[in-house]
Amino acid sequence: MSVDQVRRPSSPLRVVGILLCVLWLLGTVAFIAWWFWPWNGSGLNPSAQPRPVAARGDLSGLEQTNIAIYAAASPSVVHVTKLTTASSGGRLNLNVQQVPKGTGSGFIWDEDGHIVTNYHVVEGADAARVTLADHSTYQARQVWAYPDGDMAVLWIEAPKSKLRPMQIGTSHDLKVGQSAYAIGNPFGLDQTMTTGIVSALDREMEAANGKPIRGVIQTSAAINPGNSGGPLLDSAGRLIGMNTAIISPSGASAGIGFAIPVDEINRVVPQLIQHGRIVRPQLGVQVAAEQLTRQLGIDQGALVLKVTPGSPAEVAGLQGTQRDDSGRIRLGDVIVELGGQPIKNVGDLHAAVERFKVGETVTVGILREGKRQDVSVTLQAR
Image (cartoon, rainbow, N blue to C red; front, side, top):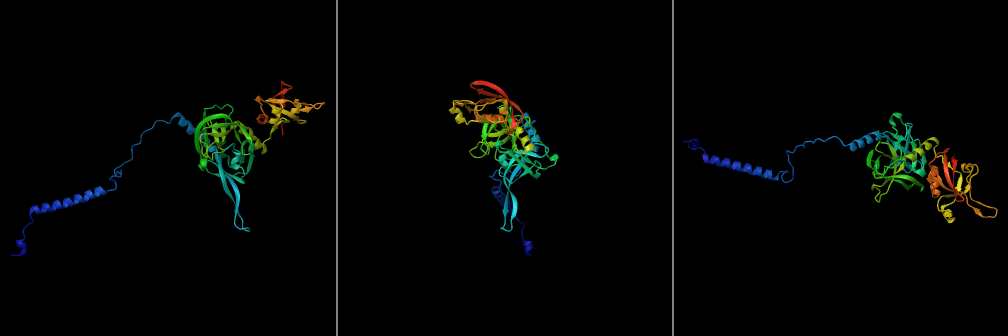
């Protein structure tokens, strides 16, 4: 017989055993793969799907107001870059270029291209660059400054279609607690809006040249470096002030910011545009220093030492301090009120005069030999 003839068929039990071995091996491999798969114990879920989006209702009235204010005002806000001239290369090969030295904010005043910002934003600059909301950039052709009030006006030549003037409001009727919105470029971040309230009124701060700025608005709207020169708005989207300073130990906003009131801006800016400088009104008097006034026993007011010949004060009949025939000093008029504003010292007098325009007639309250009198004075230019 052949070998094929004597080979017996495989036993059924043997086949079953082989199958069981194969299944055991497959199960072991699957278990090991499952055990060491990345999602096990890591929180990963390969079947994860996007969550359903929950429907939201309408925006609140406050949110809609915020959005509307930003949409209306942001095209009027600009980015101001201070430039200085630098040179590189050897003595015989100078490459002169303008280098950014600092940035701030500003706002469009009119369609003629006048931009308002803080004086300290452009102080010491050789040139200034203005970037509009659409990111188009223009070199300032002229810069007129009023350091005493930390204000400056830049002039750019840009198409009127790109210039949307800021809406002007008032500041004399502001109330503590009303909403305030600041728009600017803090830390160079383009077109940022923060919200807060008018925290206080009639604050006093120091200008870059050391002169006091009175009537300043305090706000809780966040003001950070780069916001200087940007607008402070009311809930109607009108300009109520120009952001100018903060009080902060760290240099970032601590919720105490200050803005120059718009009534002062609206007085100064037209003069800078008309004349390139401030045309100051004057009474035409020389007043005594506060220390001397107090030594003479005068507790309130500004003592007139001298009246300038031909001045408004002389025309109105104000009298200065003189010596009589016996050599005794006869005190002049003491100014205690001007235009309805109480005058406690020399600083009050200067501030009160600055609130009026050349040619305006104001009522001046004086004490003459202890008796109160009111005289009318028509202010003239210095």
